[in-house]
Image (cartoon, rainbow, N blue to C red; front, top):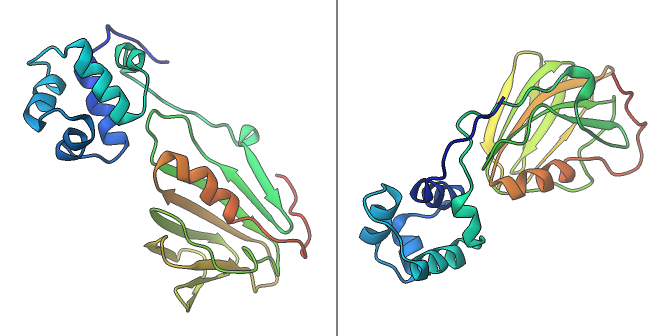
Length: 206
């Protein structure tokens, strides 16, 4: 359950700046305010003027009203096994294990690949980092031209900007824990790009 308290404008500005990966100098450059002025506003040591709020909102690409939304003090997402959002392609099933946190930058997924299934015709790349943990079966992961075979208990961590793809070359289903760390707007796109091209059987639903 989430509880809301009175709005804290400085805290909201700080949160949105961090969500966008901006430093104080970055935001100062984009807004026309000084880094010191922004820092004092974020710490609650100075109250922003209406003009300053508009400059900051424009730089952060938000509405001024968002700075006055009560912050979430506690945010928890529970996903029951039978309620996982699913995305499927030919021979692959990707299930979301949790999403919805404010400014979330991590996408945890459960991925099932049928024998012969391959994550796309061509290697893909996207923003952020990718972590793979093999739960069952075997899967071959190609990262920047080098293949890595993962068996149960094996894991792989790499910069997702490197071209990569996966393939189940075994005789049984491969089940993986896939974690994508990227800006929130990139996670969904990365998930879609891991889906299969036509050619293999569609995976079953648990």
